[in-house]
Image (cartoon, rainbow, N blue to C red):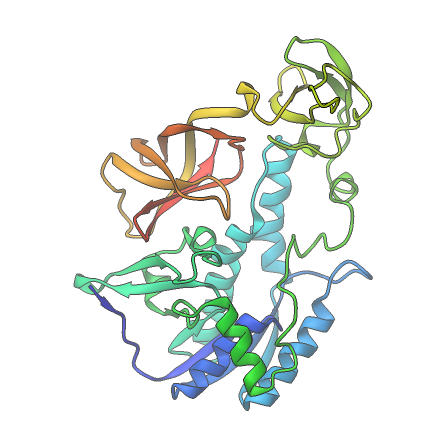
Length: 367
């Protein structure tokens, strides 16, 4: 296998105002590409909740510094229809979705890509994701983890297909994060020390629960412990996720003590939707918090075809270490994973991503 080689041409770079996308644009300009920066506005900004305006100003400043064309395009309508509606739908049935996964497949590598090719006559698009693309025979490509595995973002890209990857460049795939900041400082970028964005863009600094209350009605019910004893009330199962520790509203309840006179923390263990019951347990090591298997639906494979039933590695959440698993296809829409070791807080609605060594094969939504 060899590294994929791109013929120099016109490349549109998604620029967010952060250091990663800024250095991606700079690297491509240095390599001889005709670079155009494009800022995506995906959400209607609310006062004190979203940094869109500041990010746009940073992106404009970087584009001017590098000396490239720049555009700002409004994708708020597409984002609302393809990402936000799915987000609300999943939460309304008590699951915990990851909007970043769908933002990539539906907006950055669909709406953005379409605009880049049709309006800006691009040959390629590029983003600041930490991932790699490698060529194979038969004009196919693989999606690989980044060299800097601590920053690898292939988890968020597993829904991409061959057509999308064949026309994409990830300039940071072979660069360490500290090198990116070092380059930014050396060339004099003003955002060299800008903090990486975290959290969900449309929620910003607001309380997550208060945000959801604006869209999903309350549906109170009982909170039971592992002995089915009622110890409180919840506001609605959609406000809680498996493994959640904070915000349960039962901090003063004591069930048993440790030898050092400290009380074990409470965790969300399961949700009974038919009876509207939230089950919680004490102690991070409680057996109710561990699963030996999972089912996944809405599956996608980067090659377009599923891998054979076999042993692989998997991530059930971002930044988790790869875990041993055995994949068994159920049908074209779902698969089962069995883990070598029980896994903590397997969460419906989250993505499970399958790897063969450093190659991202695809994945699905935990159900």
